[in-house]
Length: 163
Length: 333
Image (tube, rainbow over all chains, first blue to last red):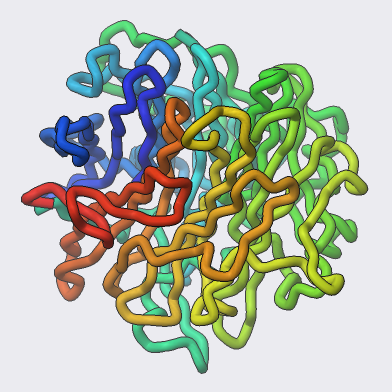
């Protein structure tokens, strides 16, 4: 899936998307879209937010009032204890999306394994992150048990990160 | 060309309906997965993070990561809530950033209460309350099991907007309704714009009736001045092949009003992958961007995807980017 956001300081637009490589790694990339000075836009070169040996998905991009570009995403880590394990991340860029630094938000198991139904979507197919002033606010879905709850269940998770 | 593997675990799946057009069966988002996925906790659930690559110092400091069911004003909710809780949206009140709303598949109209729920915080997301405050849109069909896909955004003056998808079982798709409230703790405050007692559709295009999916709604300012309550709702029109990418607009109305003809086509997306239609707004000047996927080679695995971008500089009346009315992609897309 994909997502886009406008830099409130200058009007540049960033869009993040999935890009699978020849080895089957589901990487996430981003492009910066800038004014071409003639009423149109230039779409910049592809930059990988997360590359290498990774299975990443569901990117959300936002830009705060300092021009910091943030990308939220999930990674699939492999099977742990019989269930798929995921980590959510927040990657940030201070150079207009040229380079990114990622930090973990939460690691958790899926409350379910593959049930054979092609429509199974334990986490769903969209989440959301926005910015206000210097902060990024996001919601995603993760396992209640990873937060100390008595059951494994998909729950709405809130996060806030500020510059 | 960029490629995308849609088989990743958190991805989208398949659907079929007896009268759903064949081109629409492989890539729609609806109906939602309402399966309860709870199970007993196991030690690995709290075993800690996986090994991760080394990263430099990040530009942001994480203030909090909170489970809204556990960090809740109802301390027993974590023992009783087994809803799917998937597909979240978030809205932050710009007048009071400590007031935050999250939506998810955390209940539906009639289950467990007549009104549908939101997650609401008044203390910067530290604790949450599950509030049942969204009444079903009057006269709407397909409200059973919904709200389905839904997105929320704050406008000016404490106004919270929400766009909600219903589901028509015969098509597997639905209709979109957009309402607003100035008090997300109070169901009586939620307002739908009605005509003859029925809530007005957001997907006004005749072709899109009962055939719409995945609303993505954002508030924005007016192009000429900031004092406006413009609302834009992007959605997928699955009535045609290729699918129509539409953006509905409500110009300075609370609750939002979508006139006939207010949801023009801003591009098309060939069958084979979910369009993933999204919006971005420019808060400096009121411009709106539409972004969606267009599958160009859909028979292989992975599929080949174009990422299409379009723009409106006149509050959603017309759309064009780099001389194309249906979206632009980079030379190599």
